[in-house]
Length: 238
Image (cartoon, rainbow, N blue to C red; front, side, top):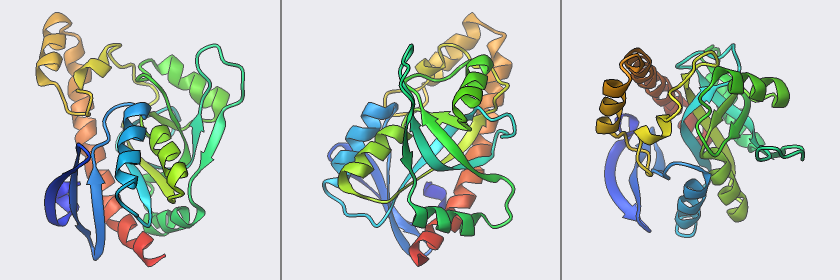
């Protein structure tokens, strides 16, 4: 995000690290919410208690469950699903994105075929197996999964702030991830290089998967930044 911000400066609000700047002529406040829905909800609530934004964009990375999504694609969530826990039988609850923000998102997407629209779900753990991804897609119509958007959506509802979730795909639906991949990042979402290195030393076959994920993350970050450069001004014009 820093690469597309003009006039950036760092600040901390209620212990939440953030950047303040502009995209185009639109002022933005970019915060790191941490990993998982509870941390994301807590950080977002703290920020919204101090700020009064015209719109809230939950952005970052996701894993694809739709086989038609590729690494580097950007998914704009038309809705976020609150899935039942393991063994739960209740239907998933839906939090819909703001119609006005979705309209701006479609305008910003134009004919870019790397920007897709669909259904996002948040899970409590990283979905690591291709089989689990397939089930989410087949049983719930989920196109991608992350761990934070649901928490941010709940906080936005508390403060009645229009929300749009925009995620870039790092792993496609056919990719199996290391089962302990959630140990590769800190609680605030920063990489843990020594943990990654140790994982490769202990299990050398993981080196190719981890290298692929790193490359995918760079591409996804670039695609996401390019789209946000178009999206934020489009929202400002709505």
